[in-house]
Length: 281
Image (cartoon, rainbow, N blue to C red; front, side, top):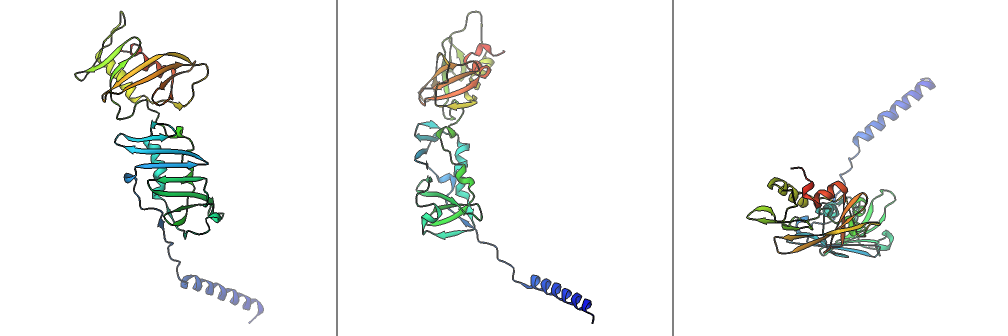
């Protein structure tokens, strides 16, 4: 056999051996997956987030979810659901709790408390770019998106609607008119001289208030804003809400007195809330 033929046989034998090895080797087992908690979203009644010394606390009641610290306000529950998505997180890696400092978990900058369950978010694993989290006597590696979704400011959780679902208006008091719900129909007590509002327009205006969704909510009075009066809204439960009216060149801002929150609306949308006479019949 020539030298060239020997080389060909060696190469052929090597390839055959490699194929046999790959075919015959034991298949790797599917990695085990661990749920980091067995809690369900429906059972949750309180949430507390501590980030870099700042604390946000929320509580569930019969009226829904509300902020209770550092201020009191109704919560956008869609944003709350993003926080609670951590309850569905799973991991292929689980370690007994030991040497927390090694994983950045001895004093984590981000801590989440869901009822009595604690979640501490630590550093990132360099090989998987997943984040260490400690909870329920174990350390897990999960996607860092769960920590990213935690709000750093309460403003990130506040609903943008003026009225919560359970707040049902029965009376509106403006400077130039009063609207009340009587016998399931809305009536205007005072009409502007020479103008009238039909029932359809009044109902449409009331619906605007119930659905009003601000373009932005803030905690501070805008620079160069001018006060334009007060609106009071009586609710079916007997509570009275008060909104201060502010205006800038481009916005109408309604300040909800019981929450000290500023709800921003474009001029056109804001004026429709303030003046039903501006709505086409």
